[in-house]
Length: 565
Image 1 (tube, rainbow, N blue to C red):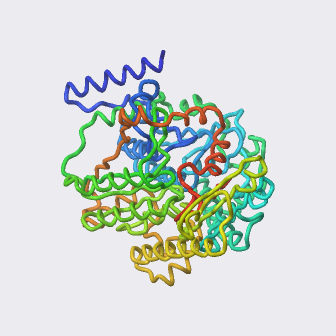
Image 2: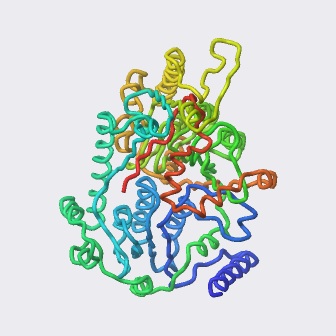
């Protein structure tokens, strides 16, 4: 009841302000509370049916905007960053850390972190370390124990379930192929994963040390202690105390002001005229050819080529749009879809600057669609690169025979049954598949060579399916600059020769779900998502690869799983 009453009061305040021509005001003496735990999406679909029951989830850019605008609010006494278990990775965590640090510098007011965690704690503490003070809820659990990556290898499974799996990849670092076809980690993958862990761990230690005012060796000592009792973290100076949220608010001395209420006030204020207008186009999820599935409960987790090309073309043709920021959070997918989206970026680039902003991951197909941009901005911890191709052909003929199912194929032409799932490919067919993916790899490195102005020979050296962190990618000239949205905006200003204080309005919003898609779309996803835990859903998606893979189809990516714990 209190929540509805508060929302009504904010709405009335907003309406009154609009009617009077006065911008809505922030309540005096309030403390903005921003939630940065859980899963924070890049974008969410606008859905008229679900909107009747719940508000759309706030996005990464929404949260960054909150902190940027909060620094301008004189009536705010400070900010509390509320952190539950985090379900994103380093790229987004660094985006939020930078936003917090910018707030501190611009506002000169306190920003405190309040942690409500049950298990985990590495990324949560990493994010919290950007704040002035860190408080842990008394009954919360925190374990600061360092970074690891776990992989599963399915190569020993297929024989046991009577499936013949034929995998081919270009080249040796394309680790998703290893996951499908091998029984253990290869030497190439071990080299790559260790290099990534080294890069991320150095960032992890250095930034926590900077935030807590200690040296890296001290942080390393905290990590290696892996305390499981909260008081140990207080005594070591990792956190500043054990307090409830109400006590944290009392320390700052203000009443809580919800993030949605603040966004509502911002929406009621008039936009400044005369600045740059920049369209933000999202590429978040697996890349597939054609249209994206949609239903009343569908989440926007697919980058489909047809709507993506339409969005880029719309931004190109809109005379009021000065530039485009292409925000990528994708591990890849279809080679065809990736190339179609790449071609659309080139049409935009010919007329307007297009700047890529990378989130947690922009690998394989995600890097393919990025490589031709006017400029590429990545976080130091973004997982990117994976310039490579793989394909896999499962044949289930032995399984069908085992369970008593017979098959028969009639055809005309020497290769009429090429790619059928009821038999393995022969040597000639495998050679054809290899020629196909070799041709696509050559196309891929050609796109990167032209876009990044690096020789094809050099692209092949740093490609070969290898994944890099953003910090490593900068040294290799795969990206141009480190940072997030603010750095992407700075790149837009630079490319347009606009002054640093030139006002920039980001044009972004939720994709509308049409009535036709609501009627004809799939709804079974809601049943699946209500049945399994987030971890189980992640495993299901990895194994199911929805919409990504047809046997024998070459992929300019398949997501490279790099889950840091």
